[in-house]
Length: 141
Image 1 (cartoon, one colour):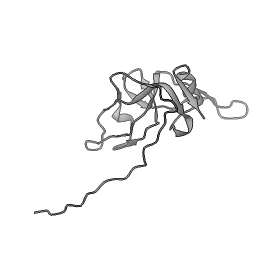
Image 2 (cartoon, one colour; image 1 turned 180 degrees about the vertical axis):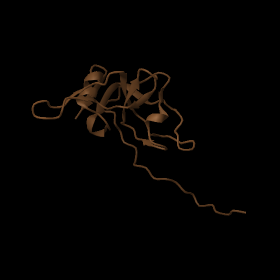
Image 3 (tube, one colour; image 1 turned 90 degrees about the vertical axis):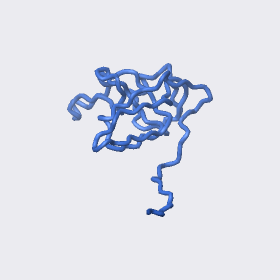
Image 4 (cartoon, one colour; image 1 turned 90 degrees about the horizontal axis):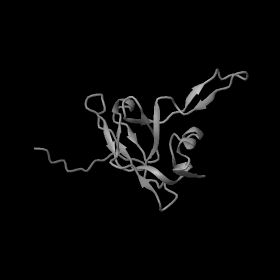
């Protein structure tokens, strides 16, 4: 018989407030996060910038598309990635629970699509991401 009554938990950073306004809106019915695009058991903090993959219809981390050679003659040019749409910002922390070494897809409900956010509290926020959300989300420095 196991009499171990110790409570064990994994620690994570404290929740942070990313919203800079009392007026905001979440996506209706949540989004599906593509488990194959994240590391096994990955923890996703609130403030993570996400984008929809047009092929799968699922969401993954946002990253700018990069072109150019990165030289003085041909510097890198960043743009919103082709084949991606509907950028959003996660407003709840979630964690994948891998089955074996693979994450199942995960649904997140608190996903900002309108309001004002503190830029410094976001992860993966770039100028191209901001441009794609202009008019829907205001970024406060």
